Image 1: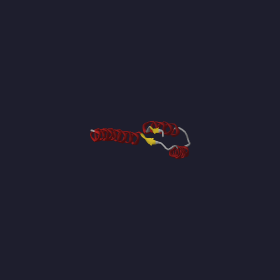
Image 2: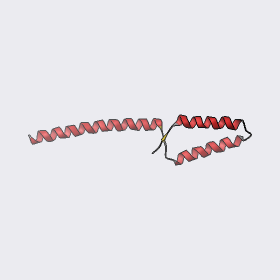
Image 3: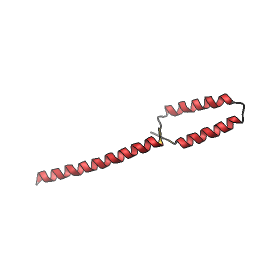
Length: 81
C-alpha cells in the first residue's frame, strides 16, 4: 500500500491551476482534477495521517503482545516449579 503525501498533491494541483489560469483552457482544470482524483482513487492510497494512526496502533499492539508473551512465559515457569 502506498502512502499519499497530500501536501505534494496539493502543490501539484496549485501549479497546474496557476498554469491553466494563464491559458484559455478553463475546462481542462476541471477535467484534469477529476482525472487525477479518479486515478488516485484506483491506486488504493492512504493519507500520511491514516498511515501514522495505523503505525501507532501497530506499535501499541506489539507492546501488548510482548507483555502477554512475558506473562505466559512467567505462568509456564511457575507451573513447572
